[in-house]
Image (tube, rainbow, N blue to C red):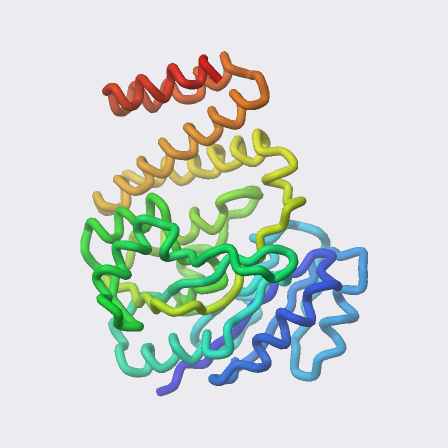
Length: 308
């Protein structure tokens, strides 16, 4: 049986980019079963743009955040599989086809992901995700030039959790599995995708990886992360702290990956604090890394915070 894909697009004040996102789904070589746009309390013409497309289901809610919007779309979906797309990004023409054909061939895949491009506001290519992440390079090496490869070993899973290459818009997940996991965590503004993805992979054995670009992630120069890096990194650590409390029930490779990701998050927060002149706070932030993994590297990282 061919899988039916419901594509959920959360949108907040996205009137300028939403049409491009929707058109990229409508142009898929494997047609989506449905497109759901969730207007997260926009004050611009986002709802009007969505309503202008035949066949697009518009869901409106008060401003509640991207996780609530994605979850609302997933709850309303009627397809067998869910795919997500942020309103300022877009899909490659064969994004759904790559996953749908593989799902039809192999029913043992728990979920699927793949490569994607980073582009700036002007559309210029910055790089590709798999090539820029250790876990992605590991899978590219394993694929040895093939377009499809399965992630399944403990080392591959640990690396993916620690620094994943597949973002929300490359994720395909069974709708029933999404519901079982409770969807995206509510109340977190950064790293909510990692929180869900980690819980998803903790119960998975075989993950399909497409080593082709499935879409475009736009990096905005004026994003909140760049405007206030300290606040963004604090939120990152807060989300991972909540995730870490769940790790006792996770397989060992997933626990290892979460621990590595937390170490990186603390270090990044420390760097942001140090750059803002808060060297004492930066030092305190990375001390847990020294306690968790005593050694010269952890000591050097802690001391570097004091040096700025």
